[in-house]
Length: 391
Ligand SMILES: *[C@@H]1O[C@H](CO)[C@@H](O)[C@H](O)[C@H]1NC(C)=O
Image (cartoon, rainbow, N blue to C red):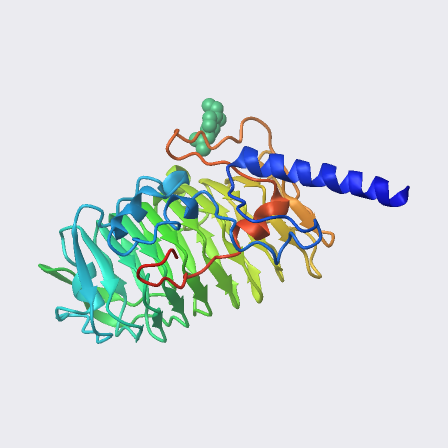
């Protein structure tokens, strides 16, 4: 009797799960054995809506630029080097003023669109900030590429940049000095903070499948009226101030900022700012949070935050949210929908009125219930891609 009831329950659960997966367009090409082993270990073949756009193609290497059709959210239109030549980085060597052909810096400063790839595994220790020009893709697929132990990436005053499949870690502040930003311009830099990726006054930016950890300042900053940004499929760990969206409480021009943070895995050793938002709009969807020491999602200066379908695992500190002020935040629109709260995690909502991101048809994607976020993020970070095989 008990076992009959149990198997009925199991059937209903599986049916519901299958319907949920069907409704969200997630692939499930494997057989269920039991509910218990479904999450989070038995999840290899679940592709989220970005990955399912390209990862099944074993010819990814001969049509790398197809990746540029796969972003969702506010950064969906980021073209990167879509219509440009493929440029191959063959050496980790760096010269910030007179970059040599074959180096990463020589590729990223060019004015024409370029799809930048790597001939072999390499650790690139930059001599100063890497200033990326418009219409560039940095595509690490097929090699293990690390930018580490020196200054890292600056995306400033440009548009249409894609960064995919590289590790950016242990970034250090840039030095004062001359750095080339285009074939015809070398500028005096004041030194940088030591972010992994700083996005400054830029638009149509997509950061996908990167590993980000242990930097002097933030892992990703999106500031100075940057907008049209998607941050997806990344693996973050071992860092204090993870992601800053919005420059300062005085910089109200950041009201234009729209950022989608989706399918990321916020792993062990993270403290706060996943993200910290000011003024603009952040759609935080289907991310997995393993812990936060201070808070996960926070901000100041009346930002709008839509937390949808995330998987929040609390450690000692149970509150997901933090307002970096003591009062006058009751009208800030911070909303949680279909998030999964584990181990006592809770989200303090506020405000009223529409929280909808108002995505266009091409930007929009299906957000699964929070319980599925571990499956949807199980391949976050750089993928091991072999030529001739699906990634
Ligand atoms: C979406 O539309 C509503 C209603 O017009 C508006 O209040 C809200 O600010 C819009 N959201 C975004 C992200 O633009």
